[in-house]
Image (cartoon, chains in turn blue, green):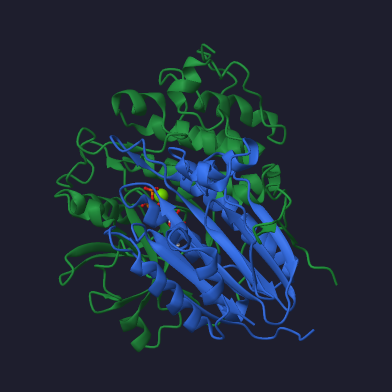
Length: 242
Length: 340
Ligand SMILES: Nc1ncnc2c1ncn2[C@@H]1O[C@H](COP(=O)(O)OP(=O)(O)OP(=O)(O)O)[C@@H](O)[C@H]1O
Ligand SMILES: [Mg+2]
């Protein structure tokens, strides 16, 4: 197995065709083996604040320490942000109702180790051996209906409010993150994206894009495809290749 | 080597990742400096898209440090200072959120924050540099000392069981000292909470006087922020009278700082982060326990400061500080005991 030395990546965010404001954010640090997508929610610029705080804070994490230390650092930072967004913000009278929060999906890689950390419905995909794997499982009502009431994906999608999140940074007093660790192989390609990107695309389209040799080409293909559709939501993608 | 993934018929991975436990008590690297890092690429904050990269031709925006209900704080490089070879040309810069900046009172509110903070000259109060307006983008901003360290909410996340007394006192005494000083100057903070206190390289700093107020006769002429038009608070730290009547006095700061101290000592907010009015109505003070690591002599003062009723909250920041240093005669011959 080839040792994975340096990562190449490409990232882009777009407000989409309908929304005025882009509440998505990304972080791209190939030198540090860290990539993040965050999709903010909450009116009055709250969503914007939440996703920006996530990427800005993760960008400043210390670089020293081994993989496990850095992974703990990421989790600890997200737990802090959960508190910051959920309990520390000043609220103005008349604006108390809005929850300020954000999804997050982060990918940390070092040599042949990778860890994906997430909360919410932003996703991490892996393209390996000509197959597409969804590494993250959405924290959404839809996914819960599939898991707990054995609905199929189509029924779940039809459920009113199915896109509602069951977890997000800033949404509840306790944040539960999910963490998936895996071994990386030569030729692996990863995609981090917000729901605005994957909603409009089939897994075939995602796989096709990720099969392209260069992250920038994959990214262009993803956005070209997605922007041909309705693009009602903000869309963000980060493509990473060894 | 085994592939960690199992696939389901859809060709998608079925993964059952371990659920994450909140990190427990981790080592504390308060002032660890990062090595030189390669530039990271972050998507540009769109809400501040109208904000240029350089404000007032002088302050180059580098990164977002924090954002709150009203404003955003950035680290900025002072190009002028840098040109003169200043070894540390960095400042923190606070601007109001775009939608808030459009309201007519907005720059007056920011100026009031600047003016109140500048009026206080104390080692444990953040130092402000200046109030500026970028004429091109029509936005007012404050420049201030760039603090490096941890805000108390960050510290609490790293130390979920709270701090032992030796560490606690090094935060609590300067904090109470800063508050006693501010109150002595006739300035009320109005929004004391963990994210408005920093344990910085240069010691404890109280900051964010954005909801502050000067008492009658102090700083006359400074536009007073009208709580009717501009009512804001932080639910877990606002005293009942503030939530119910918008009534802000030094006593509200006492309730808030007591919540912060209790949490630092025990790792837990005294009333589970509930609004004080709800905590009062649920009689949560009845079961309130003294934090185990807090010296006994501090508890009567702390408990008094946590009183829901302003009449019962009969203690000042200075008296609290004295009780915590052990130099106090308070409260051993107090005539009135809190009714709870
Ligand atoms: N001078 C500074 N140096 C370093 N960091 C700072 C500085 N000022 C503020 N910050 C960071 O930015 C955060 C927000 O700052 P501040 O409290 O002034 O903003 P705010 O909009 O008034 O927030 P809120 O009203 O919700 O309390 C702080 O909690 C801190 O993390
Ligand atoms: Mg603040």
